[in-house]
Image (cartoon, rainbow, N blue to C red; front, side, top):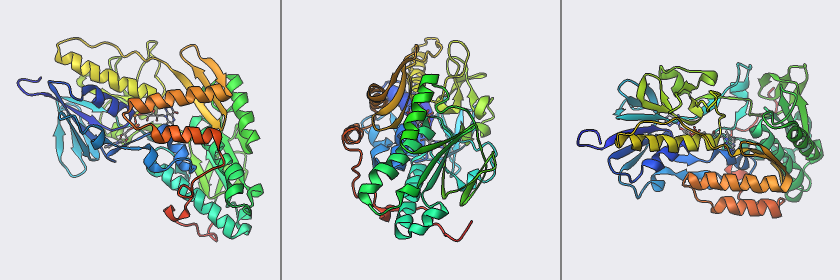
Length: 433
Ligand SMILES: Cc1cc2nc3c(=O)[nH]c(=O)nc-3n(C[C@H](O)[C@H](O)[C@H](O)COP(=O)(O)OP(=O)(O)OC[C@H]3O[C@@H](n4cnc5c(N)ncnc54)[C@H](O)[C@@H]3O)c2cc1C
């Protein structure tokens, strides 16, 4: 309590971190929460590529925040965009000009794509960070397939060439899923589609796919991708991107009408406008207890923050880091109400994992990085993601149905998933670029 009123916690962002913090505070006496999320829903980012490649519908990974907290009177969810932060007050300003002040401010606004000043990348690539991004990719893929089916000569103009920039988990998962969509699903859906002319090209400046993983995992992932028809262009970067091509750093020009950007992330724009100290990737530097130096009532969590581990190294941008940090901040706020001191955040490392395709995944489990490939890694991936989803307060039904379908019948896609009528990305003018 602050005097005779409940402590007001203002949370910006309904992602993993914001939701975990709010869940910890929901229903607790002496505190009330205002959760500000521009979309009004929580999007489950680890499954974005399944939406982008028509494996899941957007509704399967979109969870209404108001419904999530409906039974808690001390939580108010508002669909609102925060445009400014005043850490001294602390308060935030909403897009309409309203100022929302709190006793505690929790910044959990996530990331945005980092194009590293690559010419044309911001205009002509398709990032994969939000649900809207995933829907745009899906629309473009379905449109290109439809165009190539109607006019097979467009395949020579790159209609079925897909470039993915960045061979981290997002790029690898997207490339693998696109390859399965084109080479395994489409021959059943459109038997006359010229899939032999399709190219799925994964580009990365580094010399291995899945950089943070072990050399064995690099080899395994590379082989699995190649087996699915993905071409690897490693040690190469995208130098320039236009509406119908990508120029690589070695001078090659690839004709394409879909370049997916998985090339890097930086802090959400709110970080830059906050006046708070920013470190690598523009992320807000935080103390071990997750508050910002000089502002004991301001927390920064998840992808928007540089969170130090016990060795003072920044933790990676992962859902599990964000979720644990959100929960920790909630506990810390509650402990403060009881007059207790703050403790440094301790991350319980569950490991890293990536899905390459059906029955092909890599996982390095726990702090000791016990390595798994193939079906066991798929099972580990499933378990960790089901737990992440459940912790985020989301329904597991669609996810589990997808896993069952994916594992047993990868060639099947419902008509609704592949319906071009849902296409909303601007159509391509085939005579341009
Ligand atoms: C394609 C992809 C795949 C991934 N796969 C995995 C995986 O398999 N496993 C894993 O652990 N991690 C994965 N990650 C990383 C993980 O999703 C992120 O680390 C995690 O989402 C970060 O949580 P967060 O709460 O900090 O931010 P987010 O989940 O991004 O949430 C931030 C929220 O803030 C909102 N917001 C932003 N700015 C404002 C504003 N100004 N006003 C109001 N609201 C705002 C956004 O709309 C968003 O809902 C993946 C990420 C991507 C992009």
